[in-house]
Image 1 (cartoon, helix red, strand yellow):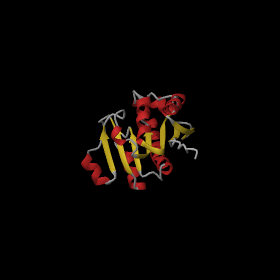
Image 2 (cartoon, rainbow, N blue to C red):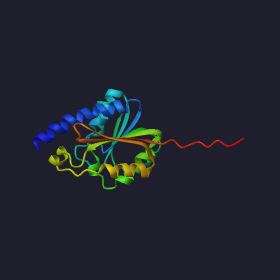
Image 3 (cartoon, rainbow, N blue to C red):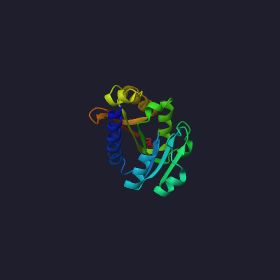
Image 4 (spheres, rainbow, N blue to C red):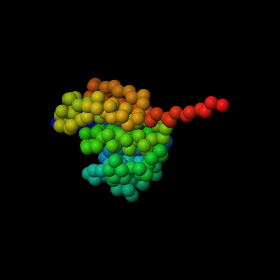
Length: 187
């Protein structure tokens, strides 16, 4: 278990950098399942992004006044991700890192993420691959790749890309909110 936790810490910080590079052009980022808002702090500091973190679990959740001292562009909210209508079409990118295993209504959360994104906005999902050695060591349940891709497609995401990273321990998925097509009337 200790080895798995050490590996988790190493992977986590490499994922922060990878997510930052992937979303470097986004200005407003939503971190669903933000936990202690560590990724939100990283993105705000490294890329000067405005980051809203949402998590239903209060364990390890930072206090608002503490976040304000760290960076002015961070706002972490204790809220269920199935109820984020206030963010609709206000977000450039959504990230979900190591949070799928805790989501009971993943399809609904992905629908909310889709609605929160501006047209063309991107979602990045990084989670342990079901059956990976780290996932087994940490004794976490993870969603299957096929199910996540199916849900993303069902919600309306396009350009869905999946790959295994970090020695095939992490499932990395990116997708975009497909811009609405504009119909041109015949003159």
